[in-house]
Amino acid sequence: MTESSESQWWASESFWRKCAIFVTAGMALVLVLLTFHSLYAIGAGSDAGRVPAYSVINYRIDYVPDEDRGHLVPEVGPMVPLFGEVMNETEAKALVNHGKLTVQARNCMNCHTLLGNGAYYAPDLTKAWLDPGWGNEQARELLMTMFLKDPVANARTFGTNRRMPNQNLTDDEIRGVIAYLKWMSAIDTNGFPANFTTLPQDGPVYEPEVAEGEEDAS
Image 1 (spheres, rainbow, N blue to C red):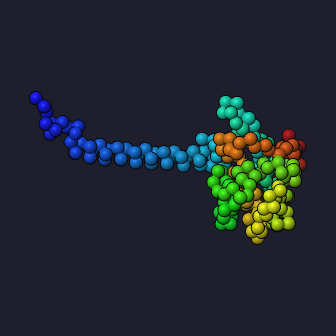
Image 2 (tube, rainbow, N blue to C red):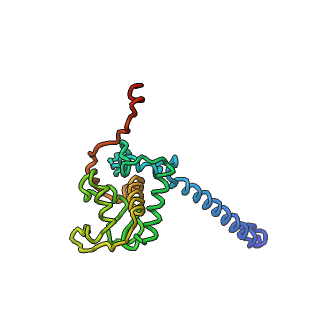
């Protein structure tokens, strides 16, 4: 004898409606959990370790090969503070955020790429702080400042004849942009951009001044 469709509970409309509701609710919960985890993982200074704290701008940043992962990874070295000024986390965060907001306000991604997002008309800026085109570690901050202050007169076209327009940045905005670029260069981007070569990291390291009383005590 053939069973009627009414006795087959798995074929009923109400069963599949309930399944759809439970699956949708379950996936929504998973999405919420993944969102919170992603926000934690990309938070500056989180235990995930991929995005450094803002105070990393106080240190030398370089890239070294990681055999297990098969690409270069950022390495934080000795203290080489930006502009020769050691900043605490709050001060560094304020300066980096000022630079980030400046980059967003001037719509730099219309021409540049940052962390894989943006346009390809101008160079990628993800590791601009470590670009060997700056020559050496000692001259980098000065050359970056001069370029951002007057990019037309200090153009680096690399044969493309493409020139960055003058953004008329203030001195504070320039310092912020450079701080943002240095901080961004310390983010672990899983090897992006590939085959990147850093400029020589052989400059002097920071040596804090020691007061006479402290020197005698040591």
